[in-house]
Length: 140
Picture (cartoon, rainbow, N blue to C red):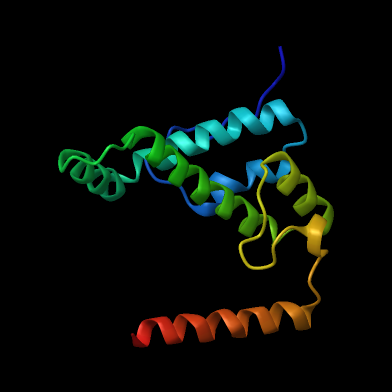
């Protein structure tokens, strides 16, 4: 039997991003990545009470929705974004491996396989553009 990386081995109720994501940066096996990701998603779902309540309200009003499936899909989206972002702080080899194993991409830079690693100048420009978008959004 394989020795898999345990998500949240201490069973903490809350984790820092480092506690949740650093172990994933060391994973090299697809099966290990899958079981780690599934555990991370389940942990994320437990902390999505507001989203779950909103979906339950929609369902109660006659919405034909699968609350659990929608909640899981949103949790997966959050987890993939977090993994991709965190991997952006690693070397290119680690980032590529994490993006491949967890089917994720950096939320700002995109996939390293598609776009390569950004230069410092590109990263700065992307940050400026994101800041401008957020500023415009907050003025509405």
